[in-house]
Amino acid sequence: MRAYLGIGSNIGDMAAMLDRAVAGLGATPGIRVVARSADYRTPPWGKTDQPWFLNGAVAVDTDLDPHSLLDACLAVEHALGRVREERWGPRVIDIDVLAYEGAAVDDDRLVLPHRHVRERAFVLVPLAEIAPDLVIGGERVVDALAKLDRSGIERA
Image 1 (tube, rainbow, N blue to C red):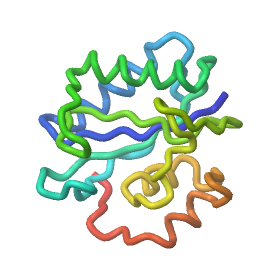
Image 2 (image 1 turned 90 degrees about the vertical axis):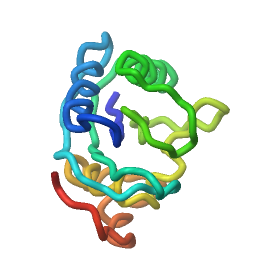
Image 3 (image 1 turned 135 degrees about the vertical axis):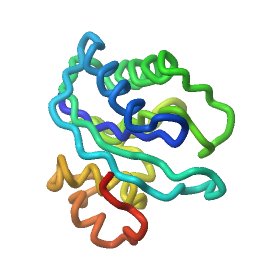
């Protein structure tokens, strides 16, 4: 199945961290990276008194079910030094499962499609680069993005 992931970092060598995250995902059994967006410099969202982020999007083909894919993403984050301390706070790496082809999940561990994907330009800008016609919540990624303020988001 095809799944779409968001990647981000705002601590340390952010570009290298995104590269390492994509490499870690690609080295995970059952995951094959098929597309990656450019990296984008983006302002912080939610908690705004922190450094800017570098964000991107990745498309993967996977044999893993949605929860196993989430576990694989969390394992890559952990291997790269992610410690979850503060909601929406600074992070060395963040890997979010944004959408999983044919799957709708809503439980205490995972919501698919990601509940905030259509309201976050920092997610949609890179996602639109690799999957502009992907439909999430009944709306194409490019159409959802057209409704949002993209100020401050620039290709790195």
